[in-house]
Image (tube, rainbow, N blue to C red; front, side, top):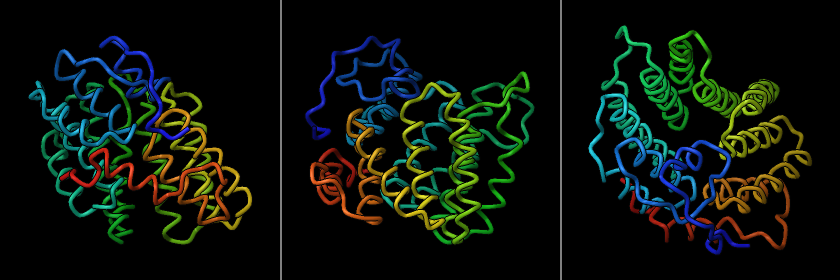
Length: 275
């Protein structure tokens, strides 16, 4: 079923976290947010579904009520730009995200740690996307000290995102075995997370790593499964990326939308207007 046809019953505002970072990322329509934090969750959820135009409007709806949330806003916009291949533009937002929360302030609240980590890992991904691999590695190493919560516990999202970017860095360097190792580490982390969207993205990263390592058949089969799961849950950007991998490693399933069709659908949902 094409992602545009997916429709689910509305959820309550308290469920927006579950849509953004939980087990039901494809629910739509979503209720209106009632404050800055819920508005951020809602924008993340909408973008995960490829509804970039609506997500952009939502991100502007409320003024962030803390520096951490303002930083997360900037990192979120950067992530959308990266998904659309605009790494240079994304770097400006990630740089602002780092500036807003700093790197040496004494606070180790969960919000501060996640905001710092998102900003640093985002900058690493920006560097990777523009061919500055050494800088990407340095930023990943710098982010290592910003992945633990106030009680010293390892936060799943910073650790998982770092594993993704580490795998992607190994891929662009042509180091398939290292890419697979990082992707498998990400898979172990995703097993302990509640976010279905992050789990599907992790499977996509692993499929790409397998392709880099020369395991083409396994990579293709995995990419087909990822594309199917992403389509089932209305995650259009992940479906698009997985379909491109399917097409790059073999013939896509005849029942699947093509990557060109999915790219057009993303444009119609506002992907081309993000700035």
